[in-house]
Length: 453
Image 1 (cartoon, rainbow, N blue to C red):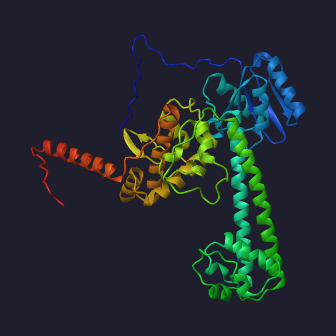
Image 2: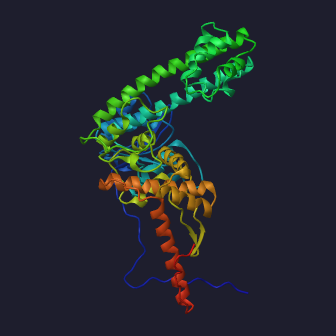
Image 3: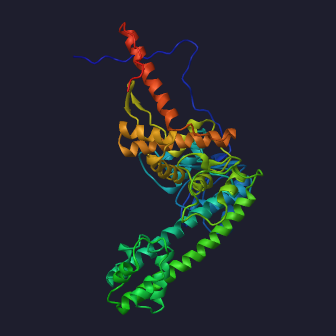
């Protein structure tokens, strides 16, 4: 059997689209820890590729060389955090800087070196084949850095609580079995008394709060242990670490409040909410009011989103979403929208892309909290859980939360929950309409039964 030759013909008057130069004054930079390789158009300098060390003096020399080569747009690879000083410097010098994803600039197979990489980036940028990653405004970057620092401190404080529990367990002090939170008000009061030298169980039990369900005798019984010196020393250092991180958290909260005041764009206060008060790890100031004055809307009106989740999202994206033309672009950037892997007209996979997006992680946690919510979003999440596995349902609910946030921030509209009954009624009407359409194709008719259970 002979193979058929494929015959390809073009319609008259139509030619294949050719690559056109979009940015003739583009430069490409391969970022490294010790030095950066920079490529400019070959006609701008006899040595079109140069290496610059990562010292500040050399970064200024790099910017001067780009200015002399009449470069107005720069594309650089996102390598760790090494790109940040160079990115900020070039932006301050008036260059348009694009931070591109390393996956989007993979070189063709063959030799790989720093020189070839920067030349490849420069070539792709010249033909307009690269797009810059989203980077919020300068003030939002400051807020984002502070909030991430706060999250790191909270993780450190949680580790110190684990060290406390380990020291207590090694001494057979079973305080965690009678008090749910060792790091709570009563637990810390007892631990500090132990650190001060108190060993009498009944004296320690008298320090408990009245809201503790365990009796004084049960607490005194749980505080009978070995009191070994090395474990007491470990407990002492864990408490000191916990208190020190608490001081740092208070300082970070002051900086966050100051930065939110700088970002305020409107006046007023949000309406009273029926939701419970702020969480234990939330900042001590009125974060909800500060976010309202920054965004112009109250994001906490969305079920599942509390003040910490709202700040986690806003610190990553800001309140100006003009960089995202549509809500689809926004959810795609967050990695929450379904994938479109189609081959031969057949959908091979609808899996969301892998994306380490902190805002999306915060929304997934908020979506998981909708399990017991008596709201329209809670009913939607439970409906998704009945149709698919839990991780996919969480992603679907987080996708809906992201769409609501985009709508509120772009249109300035407040969210109003219609309730679980409203969602169930709409879902029932949707199912009835589908059944009616299918019955009509079969020549049948759907008749509703009144007073049916």
